[in-house]
Image (cartoon, rainbow, N blue to C red; front, side, top):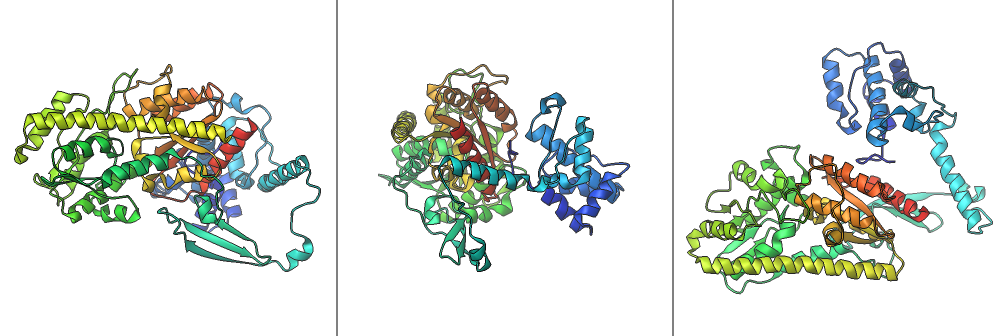
Length: 541
């Protein structure tokens, strides 16, 4: 099982750390092997380990203690965070370790001490992955009837050469950074692409993708011209608006307002609002919102509308229907931390979208300066609720069309599950394209959640987005050609609860669980490894 947040790299981390301290890796590992007081560094990902090491140095830890502490930390992370072993017995009695990291004697000894058993390290530990790949290739070649090896001959190897260059793909708005390697025999290899287009491969048939369809449907709503223009209202295309844009766009246009969205997210949008972000620990979707607000101010809209909503649309069979605190109250934080916002150009009323009377009353008060009657606001609200229902029904219908098409073409189906704003291309980094490039159809969790039943849960079910996740996971367990991939944002505390629950729902019915953590880092190498592993496991099943 691969780690949820990275493709490991623990051995590389220790080696880089050793070099930074002036030691080669062999010397550094031997120092750790005989440390008398290894420092306790926890079991966090190595990305976050530097701060712990610096604190240990301030507290007087020796190089030996730090080396041992790092080795111990990596082992604890592997056992308790990656493998998730509840007891040593789950690991078995006879244990063989492999990988270059275990060539480090300190790491090996920490593993033995942690589990209380001697383990076997083969002499070829660092090359076992390569040997395994070679054996697997040989087996598959034999099964397919291949008589000769496809490896380059020793004679051709003598004259082998290649060139490498980096280019930016302009095939779509993802603008992937490609690395193109050209070989002396005329062949080439492309990496860094999220789809076939970047690799110069033409699809014979388009793989159905609900993420792309839903995103374009929202953009079409945003492009609709207003019939009249009482004023221009700016809507930041962030967080809850990836679900509620049909509602609010309809509401304001019915009242004679022109609606201007902030635009599509990209890296420039993020940097544009970076100076107003108060905390770097908040999730990337929230950080992006600052750039969207900055963009709307630049566009000169009459006012920006972003309501605070403790509650989201109610879902069936739940204990409650809260928004997460970030989605619910980020407008308050934005108002407090952006000096360009004031009571005239920023409107953030508190609204319960499930209480129609409260919504009408709150919006009448919020729009008081435009002198709009209560009847007009009530009619606009009715149209808004209908638009929301129609849009959601349309997404569910499209999902059924995709499922039907995928099954007719013999494709497996992935439910790419997360929250509405994971639809944002700057947040998901084109992961849905990566999945379709593997020949798998993509649908969303809210498109199939109504078809599922709420399973027996071990948690209090009070978050709207996640209640859909549970029902969708249950539905996936009833479909032999479906698997679920869960998208999780770094810094999301609520996901610490939901991920274990979704894993339990899926694995208790023989399904595979795949989680992808996404943030501002858009290197998809680790994600591609996990998706290919999922595809291989699906094929084997």
